[in-house]
Image (cartoon, rainbow, N blue to C red):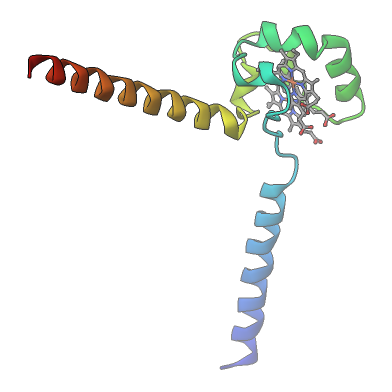
Length: 113
Ligand code: HEC
Ligand code: HEC
């Protein structure tokens, strides 16, 4: 391999690495599962009851929050994802439902005997 090719490969790797690094920076944190309300709340009005606009404005001034939170058409959940637990909880609810149906149909069958 020529040294020119090696330099070319090195440049490609640097660019890809740099883009990857940038994509990990400044990501909106997912909601934590510690706060029970995080599992149910969806609307930005409800988020703003706990995360007061004054606090977010202060964070924005320190360049720790994008200004987009002010836009009423943009839900907070567009950037912040719901906690992991929310999905697990939903799946659990589906399982309980299935189980309940199974028991119900089993009972009906037993009665017919
Ligand atoms: C009942 C009050 C309450 C509501 C409603 C609420 N939060 Fe929170 N949130 C908290 C508290 C308290 C914390 C800090 C403790 C924690 O991490 O759970 C927090 C932490 C966070 C964090 C930081 C997590 C971290 O890892 O640092 C984000 C992001 C967040 N909330 C976003 C939201 C969004 C978006 C909504 C609306 C969908 C929302 N919260 C609704 C009380 C609330
Ligand atoms: C355009 C995307 C976007 C929207 C919309 C948005 N956020 Fe954020 N938020 C971010 C990013 C990015 C960070 C992390 C910034 C950082 O860590 O430097 C953040 C950080 C936070 C934090 C954590 C601050 C800390 O102390 O670490 C809270 C709380 C939060 N946002 C709440 C909200 C609430 C409530 C709303 C809706 C009113 C909202 N965000 C809307 C992108 C967004």
